Image 1: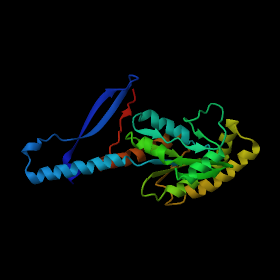
Image 2 (image 1 turned 45 degrees about the vertical axis):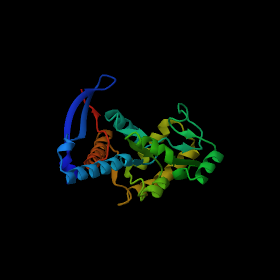
Image 3 (image 1 turned 180 degrees about the vertical axis):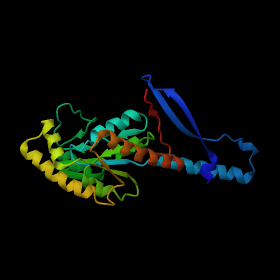
Length: 264
């Protein structure tokens, strides 16, 4: 109640650096003249300030998005980042696999050797690790903290095994989203269309996808399952879930931007 009484909501419009209209929603503290408050009220104000400060330091809850390769995760995330350019930041994962054409170290992944990965794991530098198609993947603590310190929602695109490791983490308290493809047949068509897989690696991905879909669609394993039969509807479902969750966090005093690029 104290939070709701102190905060007031203001809406404004501004232009982004690219000249696009930004719909801006801010939560700001109502102005008060501190010297006019009774002693006990000044104490409450100080206590509230301390509470709010700790919430800001905590940062917004990370967003974990998971789904089989070819399910459309990357496309959905690109749309999300485009509409909310100030809200999200990617956690760049580590992997021991070789870069694909067009991938850059430090942007798409941190490409490391098996020896480097194993040493970092032994040093306790990772939140989660997994082996997928013979390669090691992992999310480092530093990668998540770097995004949270910017007041942004850290997005983690990770595998099922990684989700199992962090889904009950009190430290992260992540939002869990599973992107479900229309069917295995459609998934195979998409993967073949990429022309980046050998027949052997393709079959491994499809076998893994079947396991992922079974786990991902089991009730209670994820906060929401986004069925990607139609991209427009899938994005709307994803967007509505995230906006609702972030507005709830704002109401709890978490500092997170929900500025979005308005449709022209």
